[in-house]
Length: 624
Image (cartoon, rainbow, N blue to C red; front, side, top):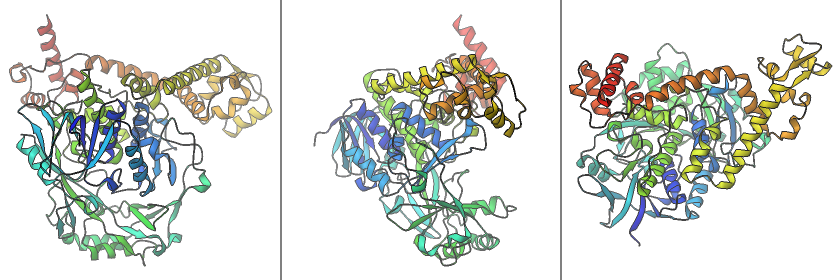
């Protein structure tokens, strides 16, 4: 085997795939090392891609030239737009994926990707000196060199699984645990910590009484993650999900058996995800809540497995059976797989910077759950950025650091490197202060140019995008200049919405600004709009831009003010302990994080506005 590569990616999960694809698509000779090729693109937990905020991340990955959205659009079981009852700043796609087909599609993409080689092996060590990494050492003793190495080990790093008192040294679904690599990283002086996540039981479909559950269908319409998707699954061909709730009996069983939970018996040391806790944690932390919602999600067209979303547990098998049988419609439920918790190592956030490069070692990057995150989508976003920046490191180019007003991916990375995390980090729309700018519909507007500049978006796709921009701008201009005549049909539509217009004419833009008025309904009355040839998605985007124009402008102004702080760079050799007036906690936090600019410094927990003012004055004095 040729042992000389541009990039080595360790791990074939969602982060590793995006890292490997991005490097290969940028014409770098890339090696993807995985323990088991059949587990590439595996979905060991929930059978879905997307979700609140997460769906927007998948759109961002696609806009930058990544792969997750394209593969997710190929064979989904259901597609749903979440939060439609709220404003467009929180709309987000969620798809039910076929857990057998999604990985197969990813594996086929790997096989057919130019510049990408994949091998099955265990990495146990890194080739390194005191300040750089130049490749990996396999379990066989073979050394493979590369200009950059990306670690995307997911939940495999020194992994252990738990079911009650039963503990095993293994990765997800019984795969091998990467113990040696964890010890290598510690030996290199990197600070690691233990995190924990979990998964719920899987139940045989035929053993569930679905009459006791509420139907949860998909959303009609041509919905997709990728801007290039042209083929959609009709709503009548999509698979339904269902909703149930826990019962008082469920809660009683859990409370009675807490001593049998690996989490509450002291077996697990790692910190679990606050926003996706086990069912035991929900019962303990919210004792007054009478019930918790659970979603019944089909895992594949080719199996009878139903995923019990929201019922993650580390209880022993017998207690799990009692818990599940207490649920509505689950009296005769048959287990296909028991839930379990998994504990693993991650690298502390102060060890890497906003490019996802390890600070102490040149040529070493990380992506995914090794960064301290949770979720397929977060992993894929981090993997993509690690791949992009590792490629640019090789090429001697400036790294790409996405801003907080540009993407949820930028919010996530900035949160990690400035605020840190002691638990598996999960993206939420509430983490984004500019979420009206970071919408589902405009991910391409925000990021396609960046993807094209990097080299991951083709000229053909970019030119189509520029045409879309022209159509949206032309439509907004036409609508602002057009008066709509209020004929009987239009007046009737407006009266249905509670408006009394019945004669004369009204400016089209002012009409669209009204609550509940839909541009789609007004199109027949706007002269020349047909000549612009707006797509269904573009109509929606034009409506959002008009209806929320004032709010969008306000957030753009706020973002511009914040950007000025981002532009005020901090020398990396600054001695915070000798800056007079800084609080002791601020000195310690600033020295630990080493922010690159004032904007980053201002977001560090424990650094107050008064500390920032002193820091700005110090920098200004130093520049004179």
